[in-house]
Length: 287
Image (cartoon, rainbow, N blue to C red; front, side, top):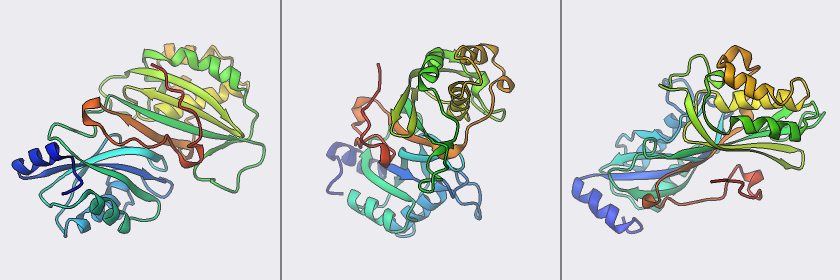
C-alpha cells in the first residue's frame, strides 16, 4: 500500500488488517437512505459495500458511516470506514469503487487509519446545508437537489429567529417521533442563513443531530420567513418541547451532509464545502 500513511499502515499490517476511511458524496434522490435495508431496497451503503467487495476480489466489505442520512437526502462530505485484510493502494480503492458505483455516488478520497479511528464515534461535530430555491416559478433544473419555496422569504426574519436555536438546548420539538437518540439535548455551534442569488442556504453545525432536526428547523424558519409567524415563534417552539407545535417537516431534497469534524490527530483530507453548485460560498463557520 505504497500511498498509505506509513505509521498507520505499519500498525494495521502488524494487526493483520487495514482500517480504511473514505470520503463520499452522493445524490440521495433515488435511495431510501444511507443504511442498507434489504436486498431490494436501494441504499447508499448497499451499493458502496458491493463496489468495495469487487475491489477486494470478492471478499465481503462492511462499512460504518459518520451519519446515516434519510431517504432523498444528499451528501458532499460523508465519511465511512471499513476493515479489510486485503491490501490495495488507496488509488485502487478510490478508482475501483467508483468504476463499480452508480453515477450518483462517488468516493472522493481514501486514507489508512489507526485502529482507534471510528467514522461515527470519533466525530466531534457534523455540518449540514439546507438549500432553498426561492422563486415563484418551480425550477426545471436541480429539482431533486434543492427545496423550492414559491413564497417570498424574508431572510432577516429567519436570521433573527435562528439566534434562539444556537447553543445547547433540548430540541425535542425538532425531533421526529420515531427518533431513537438517547438524549434530545444537542449543541448547535452555528446556524447561519446565506443568500446566494435565488438560493437561501441554511448552514448549521452541531455536535450531533436528532432525526429530522435540520428539516424541522428549516420548516420553522421558512414559516417565519414567509410572514406566517413572528421570529419569536422559533424560541416558543423550542421551549414547548412539543413536536406537534413545530409546523411542517421540510422536504428532504434540499438537505446535504457537507462536513464531519474529527480530532486533528487523524488529519483527514479536506475538500471544499459542498454541494458543488455552492462551492464558491465563503465558509461561515464560527467558533
